[in-house]
Length: 335
Image (cartoon, rainbow, N blue to C red; front, side, top):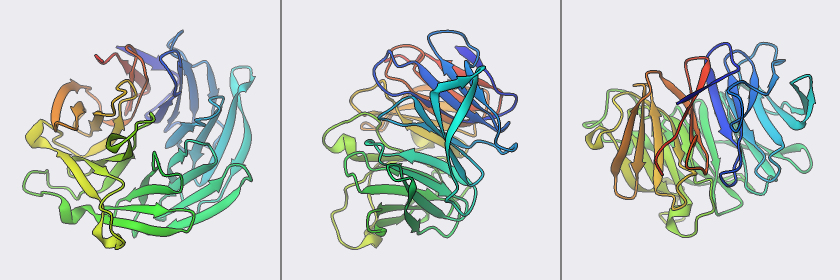
């Protein structure tokens, strides 16, 4: 296991550059108000940094999927854009700043064509930023508590899904600002099998690779009651939004899952089939699942509460974990 250095306190988020196994870029954001950039082919030290967010923590970072030289970071209610080619004495240079959210941002997501960016925040709203025209495209209001997570639909360009601390997951047509489906996890969670915590939505994940068919239209949900669910984003095919979404599987303590809230979840980029889901929890463990079989493949004792995870399409250095320490930990998970 490698340890990457660059932060001075807890690391809140991380994102790996997408592409084949040769893509070695990694970016992270921390409680120290710092963004760090790493090249996994070289040193364990950050190659570039940025730390001028007025001391605000950085809870989310992501790459532009069309141009991996562009990185977005959230701090407070603002979105920052960096060009990794513009570096001054190892420090990054901000090329754009957008303050369109009403409250602190929790997660950023960019659609596959890099035309829109979504930012979910503490007010319960999700703002959609038009990246071509640099303006607010839409405001989505559906949660009664913090909107903690957002992901674009992998296959439908005008759809996305949000999750919040109201235990709800909502699928949207963000072009029209209309709810297509809403699901209250408090009504579907099996409380008899889970730890005594509400099923808050702590994180959402969709496959990062292009996968055709049913496996490519899924969303994984990290729940506050210790469970990890996988849903079909296209079902059920009904006009009534209250009908919710179709759950494909629930991965909980009965299958060897978490004994504390699940803090993050990810589809493994190193599995081209889309069958591998990775969950990390407040119980300091990481679980690697074949969700199609509802089967635990591997359990890792991480020794720290997991804040965020990202994966690479590689046979080595393919799982990167941000936790409550000041180091990023890099695992080589068997493919």
